[in-house]
Structures are given as structure tokens and as C-alpha cells.
Length: 86
Image (cartoon, rainbow, N blue to C red):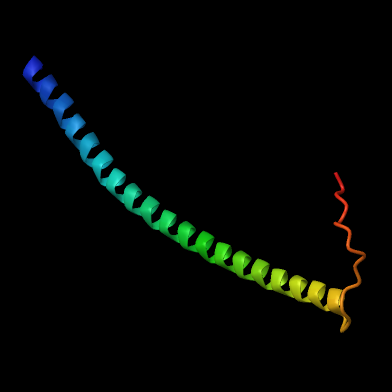
């Protein structure tokens, strides 16, 4: 067996390995991109839902505060500024 035949086996094996590696790297890249797109869409939907729910709760709480404060009567104040807690 000459050294040229050995180099042929080496380069042949390397070519097969590079081909397989190239095919799977392209496939892996496409699968990763697809998965990241799905994760991003799910995260966006969850974020929009959380923002909407938070806005609804905030509006409900503001309405409760307004209803509780006014209670159909004007506010009674003694003219002093509110005290600070800290």
C-alpha cells in the first residue's frame, strides 16, 4: 500500500465526514431558527396577556379607589398637607 493510497483514504474519509457534518449543521440551523421563532411568538403572546391583565386590574383598582374616596360625598380635609410615612 503506497502513501498515495493512504492519503486517498484519509481525504476520502475527511470528505465524507465534512459532507455529513455540513448536512447536519444546515439542518440543525434550520431547526434552531424554527424553535427560536416559536419560543419568541409564545413569549410575545404571554407578555401581551400579562400586560392586558395588569392594565385591567389597574383600571379596576383605580375605579375602586375612586369609588371609595368619593363615595358620593366631597372629601373632608383640614387644610394640612398629608404626612410622609418615611
